[in-house]
Amino acid sequence: MTEIDVVANLAQVRARIEAAALGSGRDPREITLVAVSKTHGAAPIRASIAAGNRVFGENRVQEAEDKWPVLKAEFPGVRLHLIGPLQSNKVKRAVALFDTIETVDRPKLARALACEMARAGRRPACFIEVNTGEEAQKSGVRPAEIDAFVRECRETYDLPVEGLMCIPPADEEPSLHFGLLAEMARRNGLKALSMGMSVDYEIAIAFGATHVRIGTAIFGPRPTFRGAEK
Image (cartoon, rainbow, N blue to C red; front, side, top):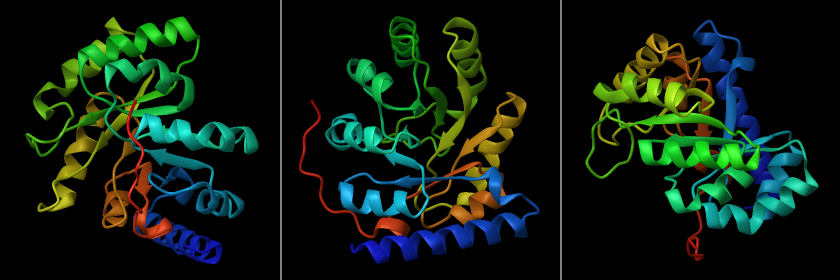
């Protein structure tokens, strides 16, 4: 994409976020736009930074390592979220690079994150991923187990848990899942809700999203990422 495309798309997304927030009686400043830059190179990311965006999302540790150390050094104010599954053997690298890890989903990972945070002296914010649709092919904590897992992450592992994250099933009404996530967050005293992507972020905002993860609507269709996880 050309730089002007990214800038125009970002402006349109921001305008729609503002309209959705105001339409729900919310302050647009409560909502963080996580620009999903996975599979996109440095040029469109730089264009979006120049246009004022400061929070980005990546799916793969290896891909993020290939481009973000340079970008973070160049733009110290940017924040990076891991929004894809995290394997326990990549925890050290994830804690070193990411500012927020949105996909905490099992005790083994929680334990590994706690150990690495203690070792490194760096504590990225954590979101717990919830498999609201209970889909076999997706990661995430099942809704019936979320209260116990939040408590375990807080009390056993002392993780800095700030919120919940979900990806609704593609063929189901997203509002049902956003409402469920909001209720689980409420009863666990969690204020952050990462929910809503390019196709449904306005609905998510109506249900209380504090973070919306938007890629295609900003950067366009994703090119194929040819790197491999290490």
